[in-house]
Length: 102
Image 1 (spheres, one colour):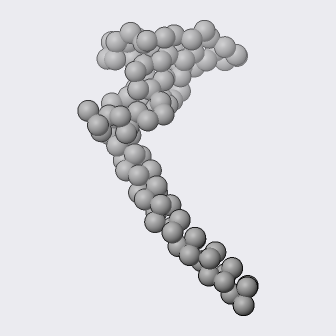
Image 2: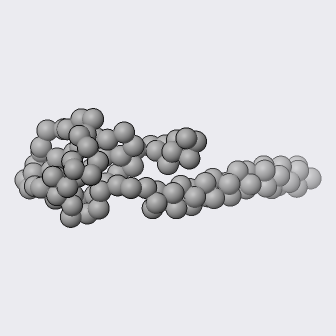
């Protein structure tokens, strides 16, 4: 009898946690869709093109490694360069959610 009660409790708790997990997945999917629509530097863009299009970065971190990698920080994202070309752009935590609130 005790095992049945324990099993029911486990099923009930799992059932209550399921809607929260499903809503988190939906939020993540929506955030990815919003991120795709954000205007950020594309891979292969030069440093001069990034400055011309997006302005001066808030912070430029020192170059590290070989090949040299440099990170520029903007308000909602950071851009990583190898030599003079964009490797990739990374959104800051919450950038998409904050942008939707504006």
